[in-house]
Length: 159
Image (cartoon, rainbow, N blue to C red; front, top):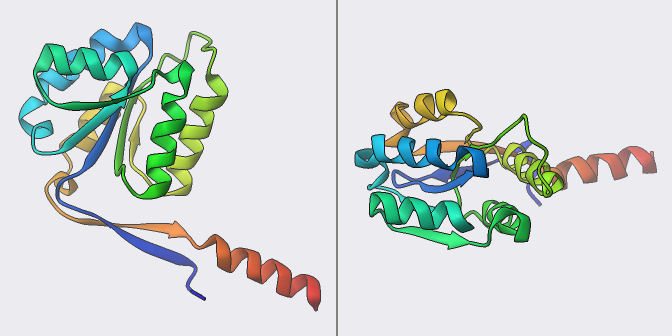
């Protein structure tokens, strides 16, 4: 059993990037992708439903589409994070409008935090992340070793 506090995972030079946008933010996402097309074309892109389709149509970049957010797309992206198949999330969400799938959005944000995945929730953060030196380098992320935490708790209970 691993006894380190953290488990390290390497994000490669080519990132697997998930692109997600609420309805009121889709145009902004497409504009942002178009502006950053030269960077994004070097990475693997995926996205939820309509967002993926629109980005692909408008920018001619290949984008793997999952279900739309309300139909489980956010959960699909979250599961890909857990599996190690998504390294980076750009999620333009609308904080001023209630979404029918808010619990799914919160779950996705939680999973990204648990698995130490960079996530941008607005254009400014996306700009900072996409221009980071780590976009062209490997990066070691640290994930809390929950097995060790559970074993420590069990050992404290036994004592």
